[in-house]
Length: 434
Image (cartoon, rainbow, N blue to C red; front, side):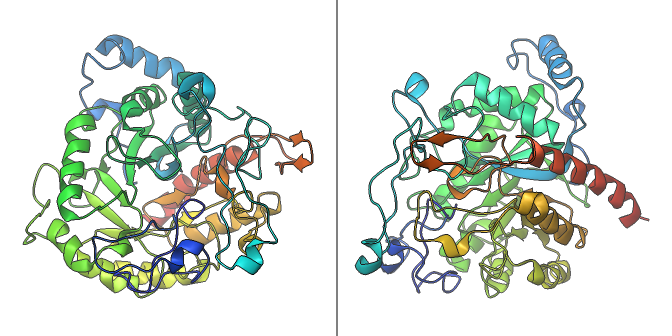
C-alpha cells in the first residue's frame, strides 16, 4: 500500500518506480536482491457445495452449514468476480495491549526544507488516528471477532464475493504492525458464514524470493486450502485453483520469478498441488513485458489514484487489456472511491483524489466495465491511511481535527454503490457472453 511503503530505487528489476522521489526512503539506494528496501505499498461461483466442509470448521459440519445460511439470510448474493483488498493490521489496547497502525507516524519529506514546514510525531488514538476519515466502528482491533463479523457482513452487503487478504508469513509483519497469520483461521471461519471467499495478497516481506515464496505458497495451501472459504478460481481450461496477488512483484527480477512460475524453473510450482493463478502488480508500462517473461498468469493495478502511475490511469487500461489478451494473461483492473494519505504524509496533497460524492468511484467502475474483465478488484475495504476505504465511516471532530465523511450520503453509501455495480456486472456479463 502506498501509504505505508516506499518507492523502489533505480535498480528495481522491473524499471524505475512510479512517482519518482515521492518518499524519503526512495533515496536509500540498494543493489542486488539481498539489500531491498520497503516498497510503496470470476468466473463461476465457487460455491460451498463444491468443497467438503470439515467437521472441525464451524464446530461441526452440520452446524457450519446452518450458520452459513443464518448469517447470509437477507443479504444480496455474493459476486465472486468482485475482489476487495482487506487489511488486518489494526490493533487497540483491549485486544492487542496497545494501538497498532491507528497511531501511525507522520512520514517526513526527504527534503529538510520541505519537512520543516510539516508536523512530526505520531497520531494519538482514539481521537486522533492515522486517517482522514473515521471508522464507524472506531479504532478497532482486527483480531476482534465482532469486528471481523461486522466487516464480513458489510462486504457481503455490498455483494462482494472475495477478500484479497493482506498476508505476511508467520511471525512477520509490516514496519508498523504485528504478525497476523495466527488469526487467519478466524477470518476464514467468519467469512464462510457469509459465503465469502478468501484469496491471499502476498506482501513484500523481508527477503522475499522464489525459494521462500514457494515454501510460503505451500504453507498457505496446506494450512488453509481445505477450508470452504479458501478461494479457488475456475479457469476456462477446467482447472480450479487459488489466486495469489503478489504485491510489489516488480522489485524481484524476472529470472527469479521464472524459477517459481515456469515449468522449467528450479523452484517451479507449476503442475503441482500448489499451482495457481499468480497476479503481478503492474505499475509502469515497461512492467508488462517483464510480467509476461516472469511466468505470471496476469496483472493487477492496485492503486486508486487515476493518473498517478501508468497502471492506475484509466486511459491505459484498454491497451493493457489488449496486451494481456494477446499473451493469454488475465488483466484485473483495480478501482477505488478516492485517495488521500495526508494524515500520514501531510506534504502529499497533490496525489489526493476527491471522492466527489461517489462519482470518482463510479467513473472508475465504468472504466473497468468497458474492458469486460473476468475480475474487478477494489482498493480497498479498509486501507484507512490512504483514504481508499469503502468501510462505513462517520462524521467526527476531535479538538482541531475535523475528519472527512460521506455526507450528504449515509455511512454505507460506498457499500451500496458497490452492490449496484456488482448487480450490473452480472447483468452485463450475460450480454458479453452472447
